[in-house]
Length: 333
Image (cartoon, rainbow, N blue to C red):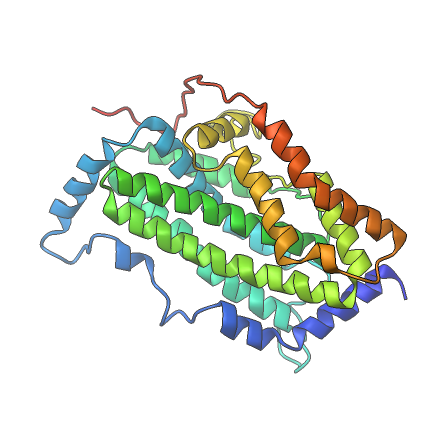
């Protein structure tokens, strides 16, 4: 059987338990938090006062912080790109599931996951809009570009590589939102801290789900899974915001500056990247996996040594102090 067909078989095997995954790792719309729970109530008499308070507090947070928060918001808002990408993965079908319905189990999972993710961009967008610190039109142009430009994460339609990507990416967004929460709390921005903390909680749940998928794939097809993991780490995980641009600029023109600011603000750093690889190696217990081909053994060896190698490289990186002008940010008046 070809590796492609084996992948489809494995996806089919995992799909039989998809309802268990949905129940374990996702929460129904009625029970989960909604953006309104964290935003000023527009039907309340104190609505304007609450907005004034947000605007005052927002003046105390520096431009680097707002740049990262806006970039994170735009990344969350580009959700249509990620959903359409994942719905095209081998083994995911939007037509004729096992019970003759319209979706198979994987499509059901991805739609429910998208429903949860959609709330993140929604609440953050409304919040930055109320802050008075952000040029919303420029933010909206960047978001529209990011969705229109799409992205190629180097996974093709391979479910193994795609689930490595989502396992990594969900943990990266957890770290990013969690660090935003810490900075906001330290600056007395309690509402933003609570919001970012709860978004981080969602991302952690999603991360645990995708790492569980990979763990199960390792049981069925260990060598191919190990090679897929190595491939993704060797080619480096590209961030969903890789094509960030301002109005009238080239695709990806501000991503490097955004990454520098995220490092400088301590929201997402090179050390976080290395730490994620350590955590994935540990979660999947790749040192204990048996029955590997000689090629997959070499891949494992590469993956085991990778964190230390990358740690040494990261320690030598000097983060520039350059002040960048992002069109998204309004000066404090």
